[in-house]
Image (cartoon, rainbow, N blue to C red; front, top):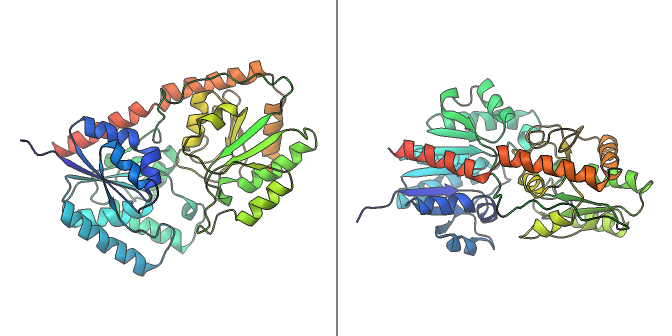
Amino acid sequence: MVNKKKVLIVLNTAWNLVNFRAGLIRELIAHGYEVVAVAPYDEYANRLGQLGCRFLPLPMDNKGTHPGNDLLLFFRFLKLLRQERPDIFLGYTVKPNIYGSFAAHVFGIPVINNVSGLGSVFIKDNWLTSFVKFLYKNAFSRSTHVFFQNDDDLELFLKHKIVASHKVSRLPGSGVNLKQFCYMSLQERDSRSFNFLLVARLLWDKGVGEYVEAASIIRREYPDAKFQLLGFLESKNPSAVSVTQMNEWVDGGLVEYLGETDDVKPYLIAADCVVLPSYREGLPRSLLEAAAIGRPIITTNVVGCREVVDDGISGFLCNVKDSDDLAAKMLLIIQMSNYELNLMGKAGRDKVERQFDEKMVINKYLDVIDKTLS
């Protein structure tokens, strides 16, 4: 019996594995690989077994910067890799990419990294940004390949000589399952209210504050318009919108908070326009799924967001941290006919089919993994 090659895939949450990497995990297993999924334990961990992989919990302080905790994480990775001895290490998100890569290099395990976004650290420019760049440079120095989800992040890493140009390539995010997210034309409005929807982790960096400010502007002219928010309220994240703040907005009639869900599809279908005024992204899955279903999009003209929208064709780009400009773009959308909105939605669907099909992502991974192991 031939031993299967073992792929270790590591992220900062089991939720992330289930929601963004399920297609890749299934396809790796279908191609004869043994897949071990690693992340901190959460309520999604039990679902990973249903994908056919094995799950190993690994505690991780995702947002912390304490050097003692990060050193402990490095030693946890060393212990895990010594026990598992995978043939290849797939790293995602900051800490697996840095400390997991360091540990894999100790054992000579080939590493493939994915920079899915640079987060709030790279929005600023301070000592922490410089330190994280230093860590990335050393972690990626011996990696086999590094994937990026947008050209801006890729160019930034090349400009600062964090990674060598011969080992990088760009992926269209985590891709979209086009069979799961089928095109559906907008529901006729008739007398119903226009429905805006923001889908994201509810952080200030996602532009939630600007969205609420824009809602208050639009309500002066369209008092019946709906402004919905769907996503996690993360109490431990310093950038998170507080429960108290959310309750104030809801009680004041500014927004409708829908909570969190494992199935965004019904909410995307019910929306007339999907909005994400984020300050910076890798490549936002929520916008890709919205475009796949055929919803016009409004997002900021920033790294990771601008790639998803053809401005004026499949939606609109607005200025970052500018609630007035966001409101102006939302007013343009609300004043369009259903026919015009459906044209935008179809243009978005066409763009996703051309550029963001999940199959493209999976095939690139399989290609790099096969070359690395051969």
